[in-house]
Length: 288
Picture 1 (cartoon, helix red, strand yellow):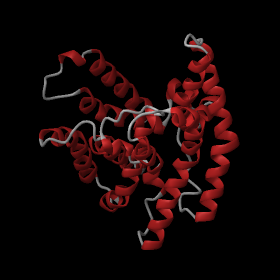
Picture 2 (cartoon, one colour):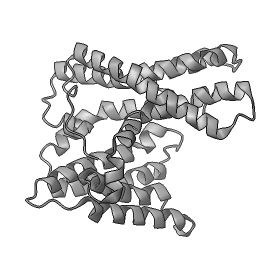
Picture 3 (cartoon, helix red, strand yellow):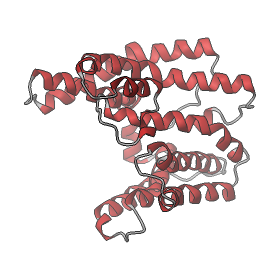
Picture 4 (cartoon, one colour):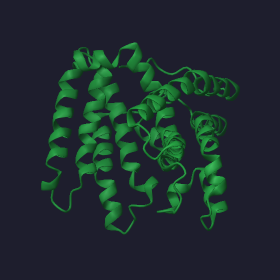
């Protein structure tokens, strides 16, 4: 979606600033809500160096610090990655603006080998924004592959791609133990994930039809709130009882996330983008 929304953007100082502010507006409202939910637990935490860790969380740079001794909202490390990816996106967008199959293939190949190359020169796996850059680049390559396929007089049916994607990923996961030492599971999964996403974007078949239903689409839209709030909610559930019913916890997470998306996240995001004149405020129509 990011690649398609900003494909035609001319990256001037003004448009880059609006883009940056728009990306912060996309992430920050619900993230700050998640920190507010765990604020009582942060307040009583006696971990040495807590002010620095709190500042890192507020600035979304905690994933650059490696393994840290606080777990106030552990999934939030991925937001550090997301903000880093947003920062490098304009440069990658310039590369793929005139997308050709050659450029897409080169970008996909680079995405496949990048993490292994970083490890080989000593980049720690704990520096998450760098080691997960490969996944972001593969997503950009997948978006432009979709565009090229969609321009054909007869685009492929989605299930032609997502069925092999599912099958390949399933086999890789099932036989991960058989992979050689020089090949990790994430590297193997990246091209299958790309094929899977492209196929689902084209739609067609029972799986894509199911994922296009109103309820599933709404749950998908609320998935960010679900992701970033499920650990803060867990803190409160475990505070009530260390044997809190798992099914009840899942139901609470889904209900709270759906409500947060509809009543807080989407209205806040819409207002902020309107104020910032974000060029992606009216996104391209979403595929299943």
